[in-house]
Amino acid sequence: MSEDRPQRVRVTGPPRQSSARPRSRLGDVHEQTPLGGVYLRSLLREQLVLAVGILVVVAVTIGALPLVFHLWPELADIDMAGLPLAWVLLGGLVYPFLLLLGWRYVRQVERNERDFADLVEGAEP
Amino acid sequence: MSGDAVPGLLAVLAVTVATVAIGTWGLRFSRTTSDFFVASRTVHPRLNASAIGGEYLSAASFLGIAGLLLVGGAEMLWYPVGWTAGYLVLLVLVAAPLRRSGAYTLPDFAEARLGSRVVRAASSLLVVGVGWLYLVPQFRGAGLTLRSAIGLPEWVGPVIVGLVVLVNVMSGGMRSITFVQAFQYWLKLTALLVPAMVLLVVWWGDGRPAGDGGGAAWSVPVADGGGIGLYTTYSLIVALFLGTMGLPHVVVRFYTNPDGRGARRTTLAVLALLGLFYLWPPVYAALGRVYGDRLVARGDADVLVLELPRLVVDGIGGELLTALVTAGAFAAFLSTASGLAIAVSGVITQDVTSRLVGERGPRGTVATAFRLAAVVAVVVPVVVALTVEDVGGRAVGGARVRRGGVDVLPAAGARHLVARADRRRRPRRPRRRRPRRRQRRGAPPRRGAARGLARRPARAPGRLERPARLRRDGARLARHPGPRAAARAAVPRPAAHAGGAGA
Image (cartoon, rainbow over all chains, first blue to last red; front, side, top):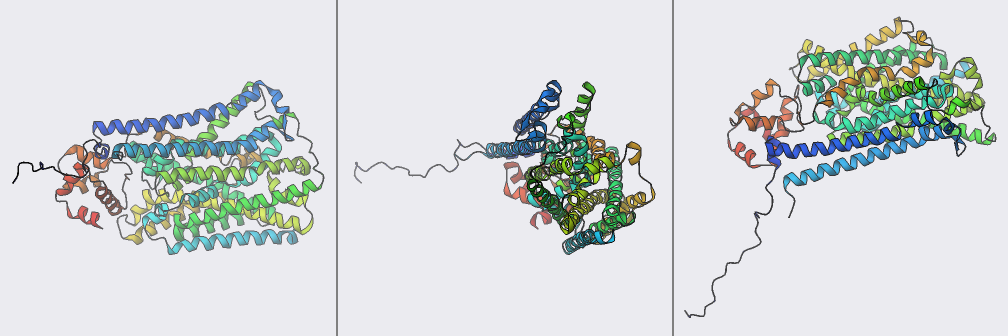
């Protein structure tokens, strides 16, 4: 009625369908569109690099032992806690080491998969 | 020998009865194809790891390694190290893809991966061949062990082991065998660990006598002969590290995991269990240096584990420990033979007997086909073990080589089966088979969409269980209704598919 009536204001909640939130890429991955292929290849490359890394670590640690003992035969005479070095390394310590490598690998691989899932499903804002 | 043999005889009887009891218990669960082949893919990683440890630790590990170490020294440590490290290689390269392929058997996997019938046939032949060649020494080893430990005639071992394995495999397939093998891992570990502890205590009580040291070569982990020795050691390492991936009875156990993640965790647990086990053979070897001179002099080092308790501990204590070790050795033969029998029966079922009895029939036929295959898988090697005298064993230089070599040869022979298959680029998904395409005829005529659906991860080369697989797909579609999937859902589907999705 009067002229000083406040102007109408539209009140809304926070936007539910935010355009900032990335669209789910899961469909792309399943359909193997070029975009999905890129995502999938990045995951596969990551996992492959990880696997190769573990194998390289095994090769330069355990795999180097015969060469080391071949080049420096006097290592065989060293005793650790009353046992020859080779027996301590290959009879005991190698198993926890392998387990540690396996554990690291599984942890990292599962993290990669979670990250990938977050990426393609669109992370929560 | 008759008085001494009683504890050993009782131990073998107890292991046999327990094995049959656990195995036939699985009969109440096993009904479907999936039960028989892969225990319906519901085996928890820890149980599965115990089962893999159970079947993997054959007599070569239980008896052979300690003897090899006693005679050959540190160079022989590469055997247990390689057998364990093989699982790390398996973990990083094939564990998860193996499971995700959804295959029932190794030939399934090879065919899904390479899309070739010829590869499938070759793979089937190799699995059966490897399995049988591997089973024969298990049966013969059982005969030799029972003869030396209890004094039974040599044919008894193969017959008993063959019968027990057959009963277990036939009664519940993979379900039964999983429990049996898990039980046998812990039995074997106990049977190795408890005597080792007692022997260590006795050794400590004796004032920790040092052995004769075994000469300088005993502590060098490289074969003799300079460059050639180095080369020999490295070839052994490569064969052992890669060989594990090709053992059909190990690979088939990975199909029993719920998913790829479970497969990885299983492998990790296997690494722990094997490491725990392989700590003990060196202890026997070291104690053998102190107490077992007579065995080395007699050339009987391969019975070190069986004989050492008697040599160190006198009287009834020694006999009881020997009985425990005998039980463990017998369990080793049983569990490895069961695993191999399962792997071979699975392949024979799919490629031979299911065609004979009618593959697409009702549930009962699958069980029948599997049981028929189990008979073939077990009886052939038993007959070979009974009739053929000492297959190559003596020729290669005695039982020492044969026992030590038991695990190595098949591993090296079959490794390319899986290693080669996995070398293909990962993005390749199992190729579709014609029947599935027919099932999807009702999907919208977008070829890309259809291909994407069919190539989605976690896809199995559906062979006998197509309805279940469709149902799973339906569930996934419902959970992630991407824009295209939603559009597809709006299109009316053929009755079979829709029914499957609703179930």
